[in-house]
Length: 163
Length: 435
Image: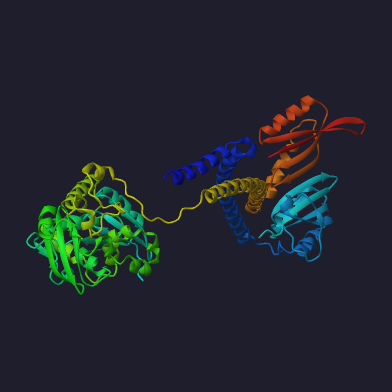
């Protein structure tokens, strides 16, 4: 009787004792389990949130495309370039590719035919109103619009590459 | 061979043999301590059988004759009420499957070394003389006391011959696991071991149902019976105890050793001398005759050590793993957070597509319409926020301008960008982010 009862008790006692010995860093084990549980909750929350915003994004894209009446395809970068460049007084000085993974902050050279998430045009135009008028007319999703002074403008447009 | 576990119980003294799997592993004498027997039986697990080895009552002393257990010259007679209590007790044992009744006398005869013999066995205070020819019972006579028996056969009568009657060698050859039993022990439990192959055994299910109807109108099949309270179990224990005590007891017989052909209890090895009541009472603990080999202490120690080392190793690994996971998780959440924000921005861009130009124009018009000496040199609207680079001449101007902005928008931050000179006038440069 004694050995069968004492041995498991001994094992449990040693395990419990070891759990709280700092050298074995066991307190962090308890904390880690708690932290892990919180992480699971946080993860579930994040995944739920991202599911929601992605649904909203898809819905907004659908609405945008359904309402659009402009002939030029906003996903066709060459068509956009030609359309904007054809406006008298507006000159495209640079056409760059951007990715939303870096917040559209890093511009890179656009490679012809490349499917990109966004495009950035550096323009010169007589006035802000001229640029704004063109953008309204061709019905494009404008991510950013910069007025740099001296008739220089910068426009970043979404090109449907996120979907 | 049947591999179901089983317990073989001599109801006259609670000598019990356990069979686990296909082997007899243990023989115990419970010395009429029914409660200890009840505690031990569940150790056989679930689905074990119980073989109850019973001596037939003398003719006229029982109200029930069981034909299946009767043998030539000796109808198997029992007291139905006592039998019902006993069966009910064992029926309610945890895990029990089938219960069989066996004829002790038949088993005793069948395990004898010779085919024809005279022998003496004990029925409590009474002495039984049996005469067997060619394994058939010729006569079975009960004497009320040792004195009565002695008057008939004399003080020195010892029947065939003490403990030599039972074929212990044959049993050991048949069941090698019994080789550790002494001949005396084996003689005591031989009728129990014979239960296993005896043709005279009865599955008590039907008998029990009949007895249940007779003594208990509320009888339900075992599967329908609710669990009994501990009080009820105690009550039953007391009932069975009384039944066992009422059974013929070998221990109560005062006969010379030389006259004892029948086996004494397991605890009595070579000296089946009469015992006092005190001695019997002190023998409450069952005596182990044969047990399986124990695991050496060193092995247990090593096992415990292995468990501890495994635990420590596993814990260390767990911490390391957890730490790594935490790091991965933070990166994972950071990515998710970025993705959520970006998706929100994009959703807003598409949602505001047809109004964004108007929105930008309003902002641009507003920041230029303050009437303050603030020059906007760079204006950039984005889905996140709007960033302006402004030139101003004094801190008061800047503060007033920020107040103007705050009337309509939320100023997120301002950053001093130093000074610049335009047309000979030095301006302060500030970067304002608002939304």
